[in-house]
Image (cartoon, rainbow, N blue to C red; front, top):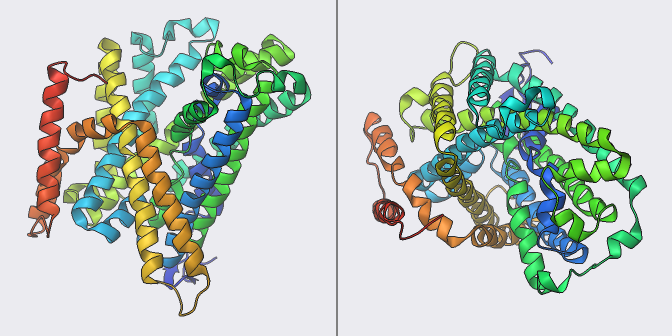
Length: 488
């Protein structure tokens, strides 16, 4: 398509541009950000608290909840094509600048701290190979040096252009799916229905079915983080309709793999055997099915998968402060692109913080893990805000032609997604939500700086009260943590 043509997309006209992201690249961002290292530990993680029957129920509930969230992103992309930035943009449009800022701030912090985790896991996986055992658990001096080199290599790649980086992400996403597909095929042939039915509803030690389902769902809370990948890059998409399609396609592909990996493994080893495996547990499952080379295949797949997820999340982590800077709720400097169309300032800040925390893991892995626990809970608030905004849009009929029958369906979708968003925060633990105020509170300074640059009043209505509450809770939580009165 020539650069002079225009594309009509749900009320929005965008100039067709070869640098714009199409359906394949957007889908790869969704899949690449969701499938990282977690899927390789899923058999043990779920079997540790649940029998096969409870896991089936947990996946069914998760499927409904996450499918509605995928539809939320699809509906908003179609009904509100003028809104860019996904989780950040929808929160801002629905609930004002300060709430939008906090959505961006929380998502960004969660993303870059998560990247530190990916670095550690990546080199821990490499350490499983005898010749590279000096990488240890991913936090040795050689591992931190190698991780730093990888970090700045990715940094340089993205500075050369987001388009080239997303192309490489597409390749690595395909590469990571190959070993997982092989795992599923091999385990299907090794599947034994008698093994699967052993303690189908769990042993007495696991407790009631309800408790088992809750235990399994605590695992599923985290495996779908990244479902918003395409919507975050909506400003770079060729078509907003493709943003919605990519979200749903990516979700369906990912949940198929997740369910297959967790349930089929229970036909190879019993729940009790899976529960006591060392992670990545898929390596032991495949070893039981076909021998030692199966474990090697999984370790290679884990390296590729985590490496691909790291690239996807480096892209996502830098995109949010860029969009917020462009809109005037992050300082101006973050809203600038370099000559190659990359958010250079946002990338430098993001990767600079990743580098700092890589060094921290070398001296204090416990402190890093505590911060990671806080940061991962922060990403759930933007999901809830998106569900609520989709519900508001549908109830008001914004973007719906008169008499559109889809409106009632979308109201139901928004309602279920909102309820599920509340569940995710509850399952992660209300304590973490309270403690995350330690990380939200400093953001007020960024927000005030951004507003002063534009000569705007920082708070409207109750926003000043919300900001004050966040700061007070942040100071109080920090005090409790410092005095050991509460632990993560």
